[in-house]
Image (cartoon, rainbow, N blue to C red; front, side, top):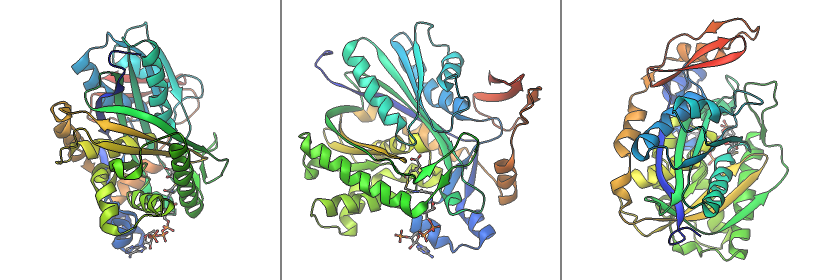
Length: 391
Ligand code: HMG
């Protein structure tokens, strides 16, 4: 085992899209009472990708600050988790590896299991670091979530990427103790290869998520995990932020504990700030919850945080992190807030046009409209090949 045996998240950075659609604009279009969005599901706005943004540009933008701060010498593995992949064979991580100029002596792979994939990536990373403590693993969770226009899922769309550097002696969060695991074959949410937008049975998906909360906690306690009252906060996967409240209420119920709103709010309220304005970023969502928790004002040094990662279909994992004393010196709070604030607001018509936009698939050359202003852009298709540029 490495050094003092501690492995965890050494650095965390996120990026989101060029554009944002406020829920007020969606509500004005479809006649929904805004309270349903703001309070019922707990969402204020959704990140919307420009035509020249995708999981690669978002992933590279999230990861670049990590490579600038720490260099690339120790990174020997890149694991990119996504469920909105851009190729059936080539890993999106290879494009990111190239855009960031990572060493050729690197293994790169893509992982998929709906929103759960990034947690599998973190667990694989921990295993790799145990085996070779000198290496750091770059985990990237990157997704653009898309539902049909005018469907109930539309209000829960979003897009973002989170990059995590996993290694020994982490500066932010130590991964601590066992995992609670749960898998069940359910069709709550899925996206066949021929579809751009996901299919979902909304109520069934909520029930499947809650069943997974119960299942992971049962296994976590059987594996000898920490008792519930040792945790200062809980980061849940947040398809919409009220889901974190529902999930925690269910966990408390399962444990036979009080389910008063104030207690639930104390446990999850500090994890929702980014997800409420970004929307569902699928694999990135639970780690945006962690980013929000660390970036808020309370000092959590030495405290335990529970992470519950859920991916429809379904696979879930509950595990614990312990916040490292001194972590606040390593946060990227300003950059994170800037990434949210720099987004340009779309009106409903412009959002709809982007939602309906797609590339011709005839193999001829198609440049993308230049819309984004970030460091990386998807320049277009040339003979079925995706071309990326760095500004
Ligand atoms: P819906 O039918 O539009 O909404 O679907 P609803 O009628 O269920 O209302 C939502 C909430 O708003 C309810 O609260 C209402 O009472 C409340 P609840 O009873 O649930 O506490 N409400 C109001 N509150 C205040 N003022 C009002 C008002 N009106 C109503 N005026 C649904 C909502 C989430 C199902 C839909 O958006 C959907 O299908 N979303 C996509 C699926 C989803 O997000 N599922 C979550 C669990 S599965 C998951 O997390 C995995 C996922 O991320 C994918 C992956 O793993 O890859 C999705």
